[in-house]
Image (tube, rainbow, N blue to C red; front, side):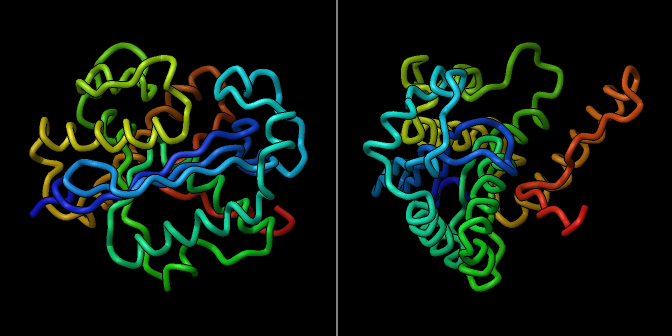
Length: 240
């Protein structure tokens, strides 16, 4: 049985910005799926640790500073619940779909560290999560396709319903990402099989993609560096 026909989880976040070291998760969603359908849907809204949510971020996900402060729960409380649910899936060997998962898993990791909470790996009993990343997969399987590769673009490419209005809602994005991942496995039989095998392939693909982009960028900026770790960027070393 291939991973895409088994139990799946899907994870997505929206945030105050794209700086994984300093920005905060604003909304999060974890969906559990069976037979391609959600069996459980968990969504959260945080108070963003009281930080201002920039207008540019609000324009993406629709959450204002006032909404977060009035209706959001403490970030540490939310991340404890999100990580506990993901750790349970990881420990059980359930693949976790995450579009551009490097961002979401690193944001979660830094938030847990900031709150003094155990890492996802620690909570999962040192069982590494098996991640399925539609973004990495699409770049590997259809390398030369022109156009953007945001989730809404991949949804259109793989015949998954996701309107512009629904995009960047964490719950809607998590569901769309899971469906895109399923359709990728259908379209490209090479992706089928064990989740562990696919995870290892994506580690290599993500590294190669980063190296290729870095090589391109260094034609105009010799100091350009593109992160190659996937699905989690290691924490900065103390004093680095």
